[in-house]
Length: 196
Image 1 (cartoon, rainbow, N blue to C red):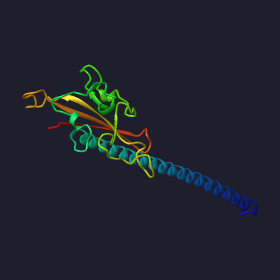
Image 2: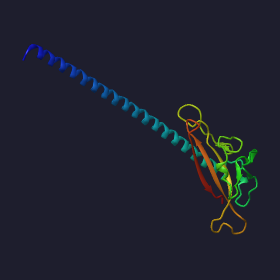
Image 3: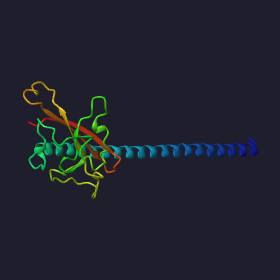
Image 4: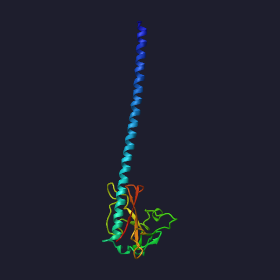
């Protein structure tokens, strides 16, 4: 081979090596960016799951507090919840004193009361411990709910078998909302409770 041809061949090989190296560098960079995006999405998803779990636990705690509110002991207003009386319950939820958060059900053609009330409204819903004296850690240090959970109680006519013997009987639908570390993360739970 001539020296000129050998020199041109080496230059072509070096040029090809440079292009190959640049292509591999671009591919490695794209893989790195994709991996970092995947890690960020995974972290965001984990945080969302944690926030939902905290809100769920807060809503469960509110249901238990409402049960204690209805049943007693330790409730300042347990006597208001009589299976045969709807005294204290108001249309659209009471917002006064000892009857706050006590609601008559909506008519059959209307939306249920719990779906029309804002649970961030402190006048028509009850915060955890308002009537039971219990405390719920919220908005303090660490990863805790932004605010204490809230609930309302609707009185509903009991149509279960054997419930209409004698006086008309009622049961209670409790709707509770728990908040996550960010207030916009909310979980709603409901239960039906019959006081004997």
